Image (cartoon, rainbow, N blue to C red; front, top):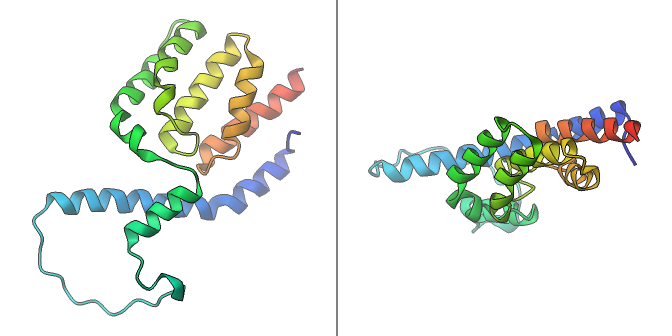
Length: 170
């Protein structure tokens, strides 16, 4: 069942907190990568930070990050290893002269994609648009429905809008 515009806005508002958490972890990944490339510097003392949950006293940030990704069924390894190939396929599909050509460009990278990541979500969104333009509405709708639950607000919003438009078209 498609959601009303008001319900979509309310859902987006409620899920903004998740988006902030995802952005935090993305910044953490970048900072960790940068810190690994710089020689270790002596640590400065910082005041102790309050703990929010006592169960995680011995849990490192990496373990928490892994637990977060597992809770969202995200395996970022494949996408990371093939990110250049995925980004190139997305860009080429946007410039494709036909929907069929875009589908052919995106199909080989499907094995590397995850619906719950930003890169995977964008690739699946492009594929759904190409399928829709190619007359394969059922396959496109299946993808839009999965993306409508994306942890990334922009992907989620665009997918819900297209689902709402699709149901009014039929």
